[in-house]
Image 1: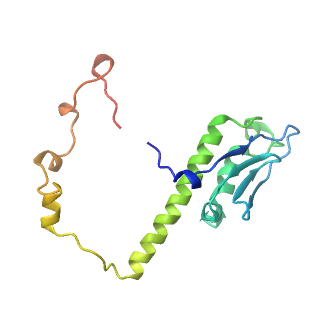
Image 2: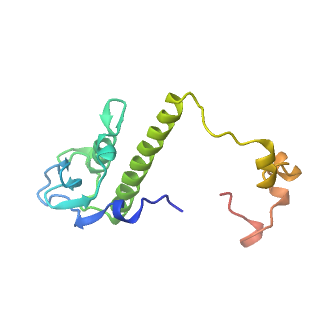
Image 3: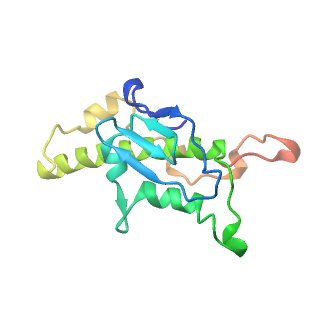
Length: 163
């Protein structure tokens, strides 16, 4: 299952996302006061955490890069022009998942930074606690590499999913 933000922080589509009918490259913008991500002229997703909008990779905003990779340049020629002229539903699902992942990653990174700043000091878990939780001793089956020979066969002609 996909990770999810708590109900009040989960982004959702407030206004339908569409590509411009005239072929103009739609804009992607963020309104911090409303925590709203604007896609094109009318599309709005909210609430979008500021950390999701500010996330950078290789000197560029992750959301801008993601958006440009899908929308492309509507005036392009040749193979570069092969981009959807309408906003597919899958893009909306992918964008919502990306917003969630970026937000959760930023929160986790902040907690990791706090841990490092504290010098890794904190509550320690000993072997006794691990035994009482059933983590130790490690079962022999977990020590061996996985093998398809021990997997119950499923599907047609003995196929099974490697998930």
